[in-house]
Amino acid sequence: MEQALLESALEGLSGGLRLLLEGLSVVTVGLGLALTLGQALRLRRRGGYRRRHPRPFNSLRLTFGSWLSLALEFQLAADIVATTTAPSNENLIQLAVVAVIRTFLNVFLAREVEAEQKLEDALSSQDAASAKALGGIPSTPSSPG
Image (cartoon, rainbow, N blue to C red; front, side):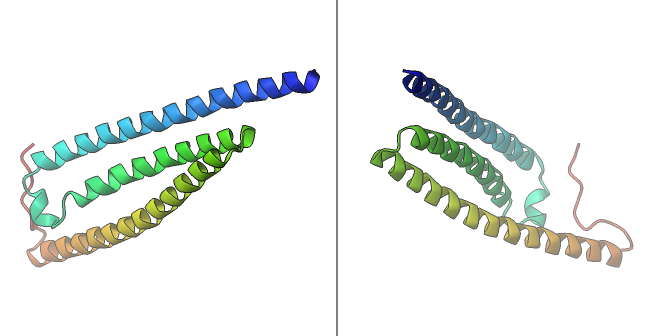
């Protein structure tokens, strides 16, 4: 009797926690989308951005990809909670699929972030060298504010 009550309480707690984690995942995707769209609008307003950055929308992909990765973390946590209380074959397969997707996404996202950072560093060094060669005058026009 006592064990059945404890199991029922644990199932209720895990169900609520899973729902919370899945909700956080959805909110994370929505927040990431909103922030990425805001970043895109700021990029669009800056006219000189394309001249300095050959791939201006790569930063948007990286931003949104980071948010998607975080959302997958919440999904993975929700699946882990579900699997601990009801380890069915379906739950185990779903957990494995989310874990594999998240791992690949994180690996490729980390590579892209590193490549983008190297590009940004190279462009910053090039801008600094141009400014120095021109006697401290920046090489790109400032955007109207």
